[in-house]
Figure 1 (cartoon, one colour):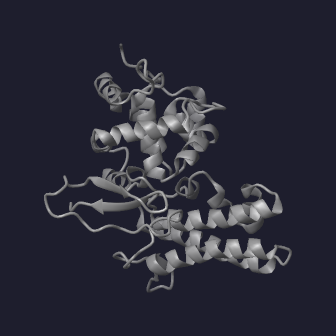
Figure 2 (cartoon, rainbow, N blue to C red):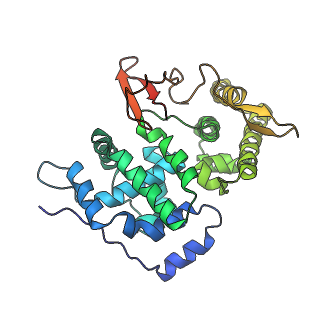
Figure 3 (cartoon, rainbow, N blue to C red):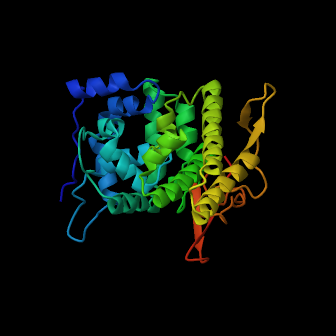
Length: 329
């Protein structure tokens, strides 16, 4: 049986040109749209089809190349599976890359996305996908390959739980605080975000919403300041809202405390008084909002695992405990 081949258009449509013009700094979307036909040539698509079948009777009806491209976007932006599906249905930048402009429903569901990623990892094709994407960046100079490699290699997707960077950890904790408030007030999270002046953390992707040049250290410091200002804003808003019941206040403050812990672990004051990311990793640093017991594992012995590969070892603890081990590079 022949694989389901993805043949998206190469030239931009009039509608796609309008979307591209509106993308100011999140240039990865534009880059992937430009090179997707070459990244997923017939040879690579055939390779992908050999590692993933989504039914007992044949090949997956969803083109594996389209799923793989969604995985790259998800890995770079650091969103969860649910958030990725939501982004595909609501964010024109994702739709631009995945050839589904104005789609009301994602071309595939969360379950297919999860199974596809698991299949890639089981045969080490996650590395192949990352490396081939970086090769395209090196070839066309359309995106900083070093930044792309760091972002993709450190993505939480290659583990069984969300291991997030500082920006996403802070944003994740803040969003959970807003969700508690929204539930109590019978409002949606976006409305609460508007009321608290923290709309940025209600978006499907915090990093995409910040819309900054992540290759620029000054821009990264600006992003950190923006997220910390949002944290201060939510904390102050909770203190002033006397109509919130005690349970809601307690739950929301617990999430704020999680964010403050991340701040204490990862952030320090620069010489000019502005916040900056701390160099090095704090002992027992928290790396997941959903699993507070999750910690960085020890590095593997030299030669035990191939360099650059992220390995996950699952055991039993409250249904699952994840020990994440990075090999030396």
